[in-house]
Image 1: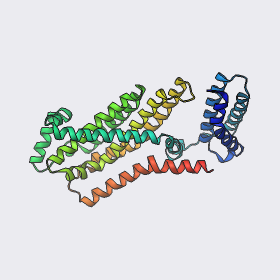
Image 2 (image 1 turned 90 degrees about the vertical axis):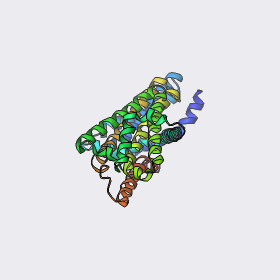
Image 3 (image 1 turned 180 degrees about the vertical axis):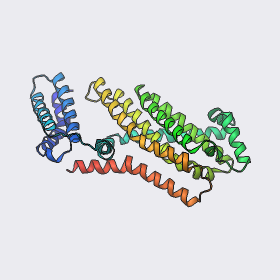
Image 4 (image 1 turned 60 degrees about the vertical axis):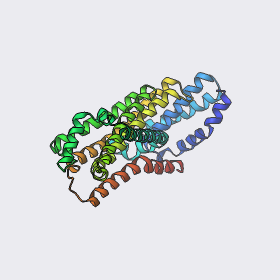
Length: 320
C-alpha cells in the first residue's frame, strides 16, 4: 500500500485519537490501552514500509504520548473482573457483529438441513442421535413422559456435567478457528444438524410444543452462546484469511486475543444454562406461561448483552 493511501485510510482515526489523548482523564485505563495498541500497530506498519517518513514521526509522537499517559494515570481496578463483562468486552465485541451474524446463519442453516434430512431419511435420526437415545426417548413417549431424560441424573450432577460439556464445546469451536475458520464451521454444523433432527423427531411424534417449551428453557441460552463461541472461532479464522494492513502473524495474534475474550464472556451464560437444565428443565409439569416467561427473558438477556448493549456502548464512545 502506498504511503498516501495508508494515511488517507487512517487519517480520521488518528485525528480522533489525538483529540482523545487531549482529554485522557475522561478515558478509563482500558480505553487508553486499546488506543495505545492500535497506534503501536499502525506505527509498526509505517516503520516497516515507510521508514524515516513524516508518518512514522507523527505516529511515534502519538504512541509516545499515549504510553506516557497510560503509565502516569493507570491504576489497576479492584473490580477489573466486573468491568471486563460490563464495559471492556461489550464495547470491543461490537466490531465482531458481522461474524456473530455469520455464526447464527451457519448454525440456523445446518439446523434446517438436519430437520430436512430427518424428514426424508428414516435412518438419519439414529445416525445422528444414536440408537440408545432414540430408543430411550420412544420408551419415555410410550410412558407419557417424553422429557423424562432430564430427570435421570441428580440436579447437581446434571448441572456440573452439562456446564463443563458446554464450555468444552465453546473452547473447541474457538480453537478450531485456527483452521481458517473451517473447523469452527464444522462444530456449528454438528450442533445445528443435531438440533434440527432432534426437534423434527418430536414434531413427527406430535410433541413439538411439549419438547420446545421444555428444551428451550435452558436451550435458549445454551444454543445462543454456542453460536457466540462460533463467532469467536470465525474471528480467529478471519484474522488468518484477511489480515488487512497488519502482518498475518500480528493479525492472527489479535484474532486469538479477541476470540478468547469472546469465549470467556460465554462462561457465566453456560453456568446459567447448566443451572436451568439441571434444576428447572426437569420440572416438566410447570405451566406454559412460566416456561414462556423463562424462555423470553433468556432470549432478551442474550440479545441485550451481545447485540444491543455493544451497539449502545459503541455509539456512546463514538459520540464522546
